[in-house]
Amino acid sequence: MTPREFGVALAKRVAVAGLVVVVIVAAAFAIPAATDSSTEPEPLDTPEYDAAALAATPVPAEGEIEADGSVGNRAGVVVIDDSHSNRVTRADLAPLVEELTSIGYGVRFYEGDQTLDQELSNVNAFLVVDPAQEFDRDEIDNVREFTEDGGHLLMVGEPNRKSISASLFGTSITEQESALTTLAARYDMSLGTAYLYNLETNGGNYKHITARPTPESGFEFDSVTMFTAAAVHSRRGTVLLRATAGTHEAGIDGTSRFPVAVHRENENAVLLGDSTFLHDDRFNVGDNEQFAAFLVEFLISGNAGGGATDDAAEDEEPTDGEEPTDGDGTETEEPAEPPINNTTTPVPQTPAADRLVPAPALGDASASATGSTPAKVVSGPVARPVESVAGLD
Image 1 (cartoon, helix red, strand yellow):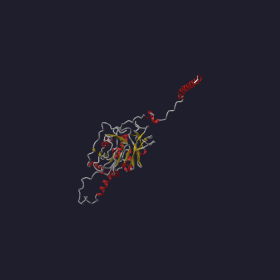
Image 2 (tube, helix red, strand yellow):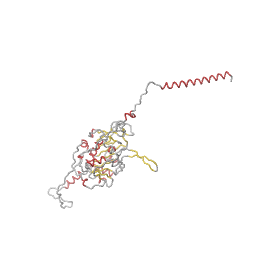
Image 3 (cartoon, rainbow, N blue to C red):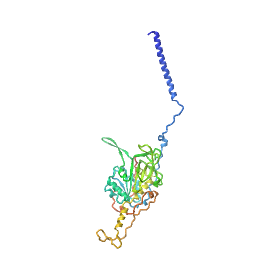
Image 4 (tube, rainbow, N blue to C red):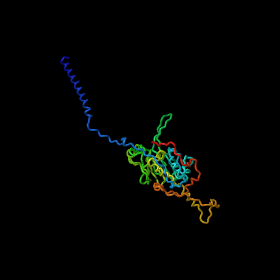
């Protein structure tokens, strides 16, 4: 290569290197200039993530359950199911049991030691809370006959929830469901499986939804706080409580005012989608104690078997001029004094009970008070547990 050719080649390389340097320097100044804008970006509209707006004040807990005992006969029995692996402790139901016993009602837990039709003979009501096993056909027939005869049925369920168990073979996760499908279906009712939540109106936690009475319920209180609620559905009947506007059902788009308590007046049945609001540390949150008082009044105003007893007695009463006889025709001694009928149930006094509780039939509903009583009987007020049992969040 001649000196001239070498100089030309060197000049070209220097020119290329200089051009590269110029491009790099220009880019270094251009990038900040492009990103520097005097116009501020518009904030994203995501109110569901606004911490200040979502901060909710917990609802205060105060008050006691004060049910109107005059809607019942003050000498009845309420049976609580404990034979279907129910996921509720007796401490969880202490406020309800204490109110029942304080106004003179016996409370016993059914553990399957006799048939269900025998257990429900001449009692006021049957309470079923979050069973893990479905009722079989015979049991459903027994309950159905009980409510057709004037007894009251209160079913309380929960949304599905996860359960974690560990063993030598590892850890497993199972889903627990309230086994109320077959029983509730006989009353044209059903329980949802997903929990409800509300990000705007709640009791301090998005799962602690607020439910308000419907105009048809006749309730005069403002709201009830439920802590792990599922929606309930019925083709007929009266919706007692609905979730507030903006309530979601987990895993489903959209919001609705889901019903969480339904009353089938003609079939003496009530279905609720939450049991935790009855716990000792939650039964008096907001107006919960007033709704619990309605539930107590609903339970004690049942009167299964009373009407049949009176009708049978009237059929066997001798006519004028005839001596009373037994089955083989021999004369029987008349009682020294005629029996006194104290079984007339007064007309409900509270607005809620007067509107929602059907008038019970006349009869001897106090038979259970004088008959044999199984061992599982709560005969007096139940003490509150020392430690509160928290609900499932």
